[in-house]
Image (cartoon, rainbow, N blue to C red; front, side, top):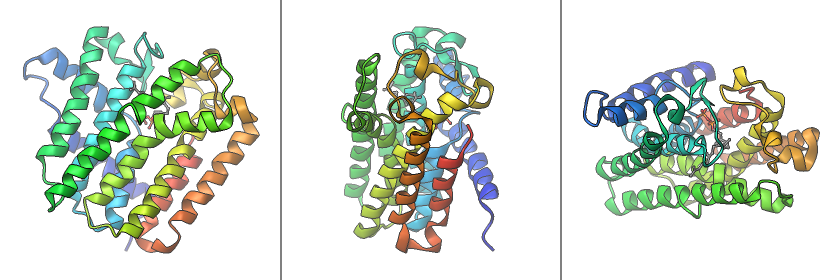
Length: 296
Ligand code: GRG
């Protein structure tokens, strides 16, 4: 019998925590302070949405879990690095992340910079040293996929657009471009990497790519709504920062009802893109529901 969604999520989150525990350098190993700060920034926090998407895509393509969890860890390490750097005074300058002090507050700025650098390197070390696909050329493609998603034409590029847009009015297509890169690229990569640990048909990859694009954007629209509607304690990060920093968001452009409507539309289209996959795509559909209906 298929377990319910909450049980599936809890089981994956628990086993993924052990995977991260194992893959991160031990706190006692030199340089201890850096390793402690890396573990502080990655372990015991976050919803693990990207890893869950990778697991779900892997289930669709018959991927061995031992492979998917390495790909999922690589994506989560990139995500954790981006949060550590984003919170620094030279970027978003925040003191709270995942319900605890941000890395540069708990440690110091230089350590936070190095934590991000080292997490990014570790992600690519894992993708290149662990067996993820029987075909070495395909595994090389997976390394490239994550590099593109994280780099200047992906997440880092989206962050650059974000920094340059403060105080400016963006058009809807400009805002969409920013978020497709900043948030969407890594979410899309998580889904495709999970799928590539198995044997996806090219028609499956096309559909998953479309699903990833739509649900990555939906994630950000909901993030904008929550920044405006939820409180700091629920989010585990400072709420209301977008308006305080005069940042263009879906809420500032479309208003709250308009942003919510857009999230619903993206959700619907994301589910449609999985149309013909049936039962094996059940977890992806449930994750899409979670991403749009979440309250934190
Ligand atoms: C510094 C290169 C660089 C990039 C930073 C991800 C990012 C780009 C900035 C984080 C700030 C932010 C609010 C981004 C948009 C949405 C987002 C990615 C939120 C955080 O992701 P969640 O909700 O966080 O999945 P948890 O803590 O659950 O993992």
